Image (cartoon, rainbow, N blue to C red; front, side, top):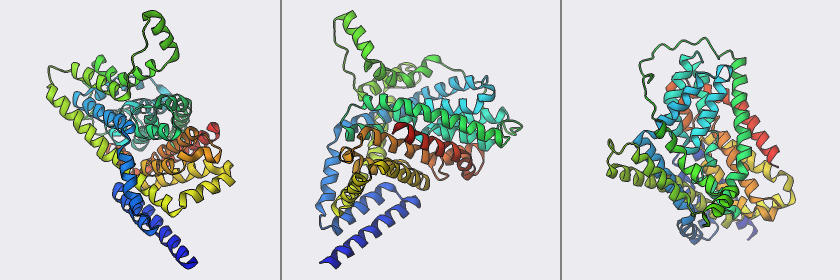
Length: 436
């Protein structure tokens, strides 16, 4: 009987190692997580646990709604070009940044990433404008591309519809706005460290000036900014932040003798989509907007929530094997290093796989949900894990965002990883230490 138990553990370890290897080799993450979870459940003698995990994940409408609505809004922004107007409006500021040109570009990208939560999507939208602009101003192509990639370090977590934020809220059993208020300061500190860390790297490498852009044929110099369109991308987040503010609630109730309307995340995204359509109703048909919004919702469920479902099945496999409980028991005995284990492991996996989702979501669903048993605040542990996952992905040369930025600058993605290494590592360490 004992030999059978040892064989079962050995097989499970092999499955976990294969899972990590396949993620590193960039196989379809949903397929890898789903298959591994099912295999682990079968080895544990509990195949139905995988199916139960699927059913449990599908029933989480409170997480599905904000994720699909946020993706629908992102698709509408692209259709109506509101995201492009915001990028161009903010890029105007960079022309007067002087020595703060690089940190300014990082912070602008981070600000836009709050609305355009996909790292690859944000890099594509921002990089098309910011990278050529920096290169025209004499910045080395690799450094210019690094600014945009680094700007996607994780500020998307401050969007109430972002899936990682909703996972943290769920496992912490708190409102998603509480998570955002908690994380805002720490993500702000991380942004400053990343921005000025890259500035120092650029100055040391002497890449701040001297580069001459050869081809300026696609620089969009004559783009005319519509200020109303430029504001639309930040409207949903602004609505949610204002309505959740206690001072605004007091003022509203005292002035109108009414309670503040309850506006959910999905509602805010729909309002934003409607405003985006109004800005260009003469050029875009309502039917097209609806198609895009629904297409975005489909993408949100298929790609984003699909990963969450499959990560849940993988976690079910780990739980069936007893791995999760063993890890929790170890952390109970060593609570001081629980945060360290979660952050270092997640950062490393995000770096080598090019994705912060698989590692961050799996850890939060498996361990963070039981953080109270370890003596830790679930919101604290979940926030740290999601933060370092984003930072690890921001220095990965195989991340989709890195490849997009490198393509714009016509450099090797590894050059971006070299320049972002120091800022991201320092920011990750700082986040863990400050948040403890």
